[in-house]
Image (cartoon, rainbow, N blue to C red; front, top):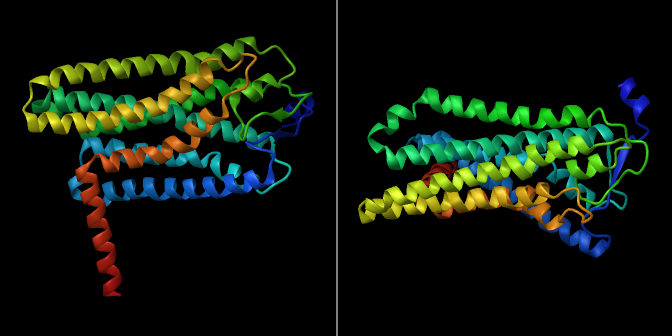
Length: 314
């Protein structure tokens, strides 16, 4: 800590936020608060439904429950602070608070990225190798995929934050954002950060996200080609599942690529895409999977029925 204080005179960062109008900020407070509550409720419902409903004890729903958990954590890394800042005239975040926020956002973001790839593998095996599905996607394999997602998330964030924490900040401390965004924070360092900027571009969005996104699209294309020869009933169910996965993958990787592929240009980071990535996507994922999945809707109805019965009992 003393070493960091000697190298940096900045103890906090000032967040510009989404608007300077008090009326607009109150409106944003209401919107973000309601959206965050919906994120908590929607993703928790999926997690609880998968845990308590025996009909959902399959690899696909195992991954879906963990995806909802990652979405919940990813949104919680920054959204509560964003919501509270709408009620403050001066929006600041401590140096350590900023570093912690970025660490967990990239940790859960990197983990979710890996989990989406695992979900694509699961769908490929289920549709292209149905006779060997239970053998290939064993409990051991599922646990391995999940642990790998956590490890990749940790490597993803540590490989960037270990260098960011050591940067000296001795000048401007104003971030044109509503949360601590890694590319913007790096730009405030009073030292040469060209190598670190390249690392962020490769690791966070530009290269790694783009390659993962292309590989996922290729895998889903292979699956779509494979299911053309299935019966109409099986084809319809497969298409419904795949369309939900493809939509979620696009919503996750799209904003991420745009935010981090060109983060150090003369243009500021698009705040709309930042909102979309950190708030809207975690909200849409449970909606997409619930509305497009009859088994999940049935499980939630059973969960609601059990809750009503338990209340009548007491």
